[in-house]
Image (tube, rainbow, N blue to C red; front, side):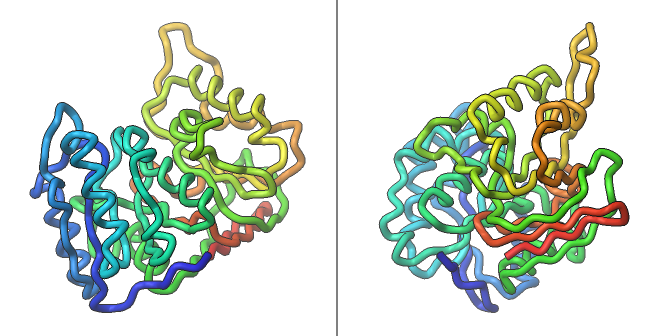
Length: 299
């Protein structure tokens, strides 16, 4: 189902459904959104604190629900990732959202929301979050791609090839996000349906053996068997044990997909990396991989 693109003067809302955040950490994003002539409102509980969370489950749920229900809000931005959306997703009511859909934006822990929305038949935006904007210039590619997606509903990227790429082309709806979250929601009501889809995965700060465990989980549950294509984003700040695992994250992924004949793109600039280009999840997507470059037409 389509969601209207943004226009100047629209209202967006920033909420914190996961880890806690301060006003100082949001200041830059408020200036960015003002530059694009967007009206920004903040969740009532956005600066609350409860241990590592931005308030209790009930407070974070209340802010998310108000944003979903408010007909004047045209896009919802998750302020940051961390952990927390999985604790509240089952408490959210999407009845009003279905009648008046809007963009939900973020990455990392927001993956559970992206997957849940695709189960409901709605697209969403995997993109930089307000906390990331503190160290960005106004013309940063992460931000310009995000705004291009929100205002135009289309993205077209050409990136350099990766030595592990598997050439080919494919069309399908784009799904996925953070690998750890996809692993966590497997076989739940928010489970990501990957059949005949182009799957995007990325992760950060994981042990290499756990990347192996998660890829095996996806493989054994047939999440990798019927893909149209696989896109691997940032696999950053990986950890290893004293006795090395022996393979890098990308090599682990290649090992568990080597028997499938779909094209695979490694090193796509999205995820927990400095250049985090926006992706329109749940939308028709085409990928073309050859020895010269990778093209992605998204939206």
